[in-house]
Image (cartoon, rainbow, N blue to C red; front, side):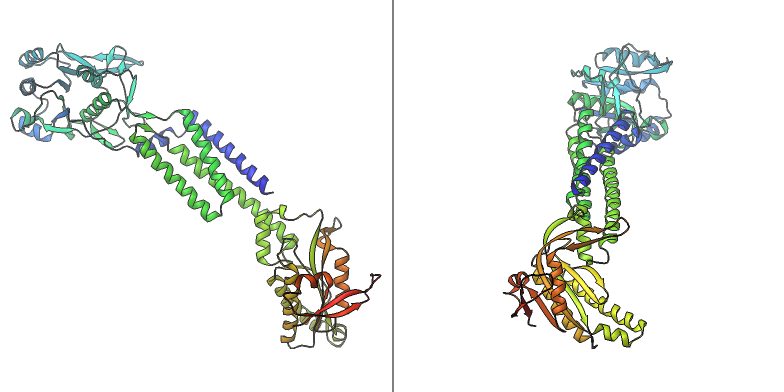
Length: 538
């Protein structure tokens, strides 16, 4: 049964793994998966080579209402002549009255300047808007997936990305068609401080991106790390290209292997460990995987969090439910077959081991058998009312049954005033002969303490018997049959009040632990020769 239980739990794991893999391939829960993976993001250390000149609230207050005259940008170029690359994240798609000076300045620094173009999509085709000045440009569109900016194509049709063009001007190229951005917060200088000589920042050989950060200009996007200005996203994209540390999602094959491994691990943990330890181990597995995902992210690989977490949780729930149903069935089986005949601890052990612990079809086993019969019960029942007889008998049977259970014995049956108990069935019991004798001694002492005229005669044997579910289709009892059973019954009938008689086999197993005396051989019905009998001295 235990083997079958484990096999079914592995089948559950396999089915769950197949179901989750199928869901992954049809992009179910894609948005949830992305948002969960977003929790892994953190700002990376920025490159000192990249500086942002921010068109911030301070600059707008000092320079004036937006949009500015292009002469303002011409002043900025005067301050940035020694920069390696100057990227304008500002749209220059239309002519203005102040273009002349700025045009002259851009012509002087033509090889250093990159401006933004913009791609407008019509019927999935890019309609490109380019700057009016004769400089190199790149599209500045920031694309979102479920409202979050995470990745950036390096080229659309013939137009390269703004960040890609900047990186190329700096001397770094990438062969990736698309990058997952590794975000950073770069050093920022206010635009007004730049043109008013209020900064001592050295821009020599730097990559300078000029763009808006003022809230009212609304040039910002949602990222895994919150809302960021577009110019900061472009700066992060530039750094990602320069460092070659574009993030990557784990391969589908690794994810499939992970889902199967985690699901099977949970099944094994639930099978091998007690529930409390299994819960702790499963939580530890969740935490360990999350820690692994953090370290993996730091090395540039984004592990899928949603489906592995789902694999652990769903497998745990389904296997627990399966075990609960199995245990409920086992409890019902134990209750129906043994509920009234074994102690709670034995019942729990039977439930834990399952049906495989008991061979109901029949087996031969060495067992100790105890018969106890009340002396003088017949005369008592004749002199008292049925209510009194039944009440007194129930009282005695209740007390004696508790004692049998105390020593891990099994109550086989009541036959009127007689009790039959077995030891070493249905579960193995070490020193079962000793346990049967200890039970008998305590039963005798208990009957005296109950202050009635009832006294027991008890017979005990140990021997090989047949154990199994015996009876008819309408009624079955788990019991023992054999010569040793008959002998125990005969010894019980021979025993006097307060006397405990042992067979030779039982005596040999307890003689060094229990005080006894031989009473010789006695003739027993069903035996051709007299049998040696011993009395327990207590």
